[in-house]
Image (cartoon, rainbow, N blue to C red; front, side, top):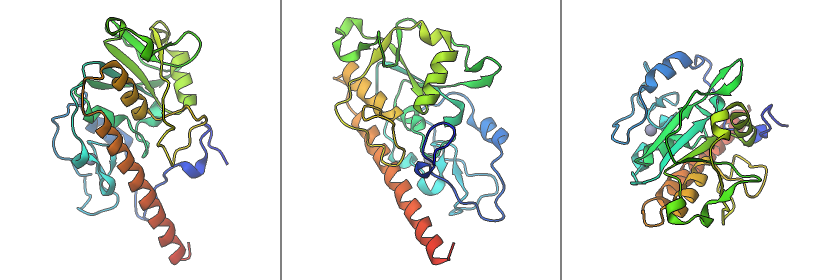
Length: 252
Ligand SMILES: [Zn+2]
């Protein structure tokens, strides 16, 4: 079975609510986000009314449930190339999203949140000079083929499923005007529980790390982002298995 955006339902992380749990209040979640992320932000702020150890508690820094909070694993890398993560609205609170890991782990990284409108899904944005977009296809230049002085100073990375990325690209003319670049990832995706449609498809954070390693091979610390990503996938698999076992034991 597939969801409307093309992802198999069984690959999605689905949280089982307790009978007395209320639906998330998106207005308060948005209000809590505040200004663009800065790596020096400190401790997670617990959900109002949530007690320590409550499985419903939410970390507003990494946007994960507190039981799988990633904040203590984050290390900041001093990247030179600015990363602009253009995020589809459906990706913002996805349990398996990776944009927040990148934003917390890179000194120069911003999340640009797209919004729904009558014109589609988009954002009015004026990209800085020497910005390119990572978007494979005809006319895209492999990043690895660029000379050092040809490399972009800023790189837009689209965050969402491939259908989401297509919508973002289609509905935002400023993206279409940017130089287009492509990756040739040497390894298959590590995304073990959120299937990608083609073997060359990789997650947002894998794309960012792959691009930065090409653009600035002298900068260290990028591989640690993938360690955090791997640990997130391990956590999700472990908690999914525990829920399955718990459900089987209780006869659900
Ligand atoms: Zn956290």
